[in-house]
Length: 346
Image (spheres, rainbow, N blue to C red):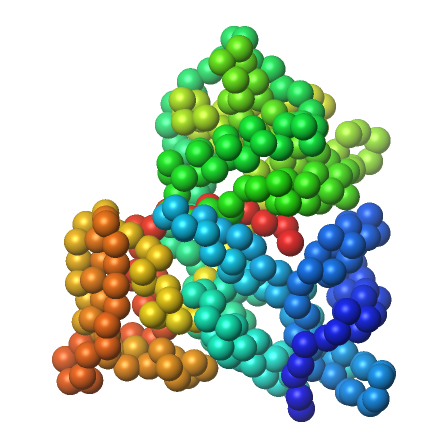
């Protein structure tokens, strides 16, 4: 069994496999994905290789996203399209593939990887855990109605102010979030359009107040359901989930509003790279003995100091007195008070 990255021709040749593995994705969405994403991502695969021919048996797509992490920008791998051919399942191919993918990402000095699991239990065994501090609908009071505000469809000429608004809103509330730039917004327009949706702006005389990104799932004779990918609102609009739904209904009259869960799992790839990225509201120091069965360089004893101004990790002699935990448990401890907002389809 051998895992390797596919070349550009082989990557495009995985489309039929992708369509059979993910029949819920529309042809329009797959067109978008193979035009906008597959040309720029990595596909790591196990298969049978003979000369110029390749028969992929299992694959994982590694899509790099630029994240804003406490003011810095890092390219972080996002694992999607994890699939095994039906006749190749329960043979250890996917486990082998993902372990080798994690080792390769570690060699490339990525701090962590993330994914949105179809089966969380499967990824738990690989050291993934849910980010413990992900956003949900706020429980605060509805501050509306908001006179003088209206929705309109966004255009490419709005990208500059969209990026400034999104990065400011996300940076004020979250330590880790997607970084919005020109390339991200252009892809977002194409992605939403492939899902029969779009991007809308909430405006007032004071400027931009919100951004809505959505896709549409047709249902019977009606307009169907609008799946909300992202709803970014100015900090002066403290809305609970019911109020958020009302705001979306004002933008999309006639549609049922659905906020699909997009809870992400995280896997630390390098303790040395990861710890300096995060902050803690309070100073705290941990002495831990870490085990990582996939990435041995993460194993050992560490003193980790966390604080509001910065964090660092240093190796210490293994005395046996440190708290014992695996790499997944460490992620849960380190991220317990780190707010994260990552809502991605691909």
